[in-house]
Length: 195
Ligand SMILES: *[C@@H]1O[C@H](CO)[C@@H](O)[C@H](O)[C@H]1NC(C)=O
Ligand SMILES: *[C@@H]1O[C@H](CO)[C@@H](O)[C@H](O)[C@H]1NC(C)=O
Ligand SMILES: *[C@@H]1O[C@H](CO)[C@@H](O)[C@H](O)[C@H]1NC(C)=O
Image: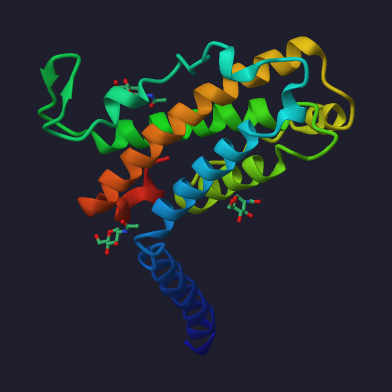
């Protein structure tokens, strides 16, 4: 009997600890704040002209991530999207689409040559949003990314970076709206469970 007790108590403590960690959700506003920070950092990166040398970035077209439908999936219930009033808000799809966007941009940006670390704040705040608000594993095969980081970028790389960052800025606005909407409806409490 004492032996059973010895084994039982640590197991129970572990269980209680796990429950405590799960129910101790992130402060309601922190994902909203992390998303705002990300948008600020992306916007700031776009002002770093050395990232785009020899390229007139404001004149370039925007390259969006077409693998996700975040703008329509995360549009609030009752909003009008392409002339159709949205009658449902599917939180899980919205979360998954946002999470997919974050992965996409993380993988892309971490692999960019960036000898002056001008993209680092964006990559870090992206990472923070992923880790704090979405329980997603970060892409692990970043060894080649680190090798890329120190060399100078080519013209084509800078051109692509400009277009992708412009798209990411737009997508960050959409992500901000989606997260703020989920926060305002209280849905954000479940935010870590769906990824
Ligand atoms: C998030 O929602 C909570 C209550 O639901 C609210 O108190 C808080 O101000 C919201 N945070 C932001 C940044 O809007
Ligand atoms: C994005 O949302 C759509 C619903 O429009 C859903 O079918 C799709 O699975 C979502 N993407 C991911 C990665 O979950
Ligand atoms: C992102 O930008 C904010 C405000 O401009 C800055 O305080 C913060 O340090 C940046 N984030 C990171 C991870 O560097």
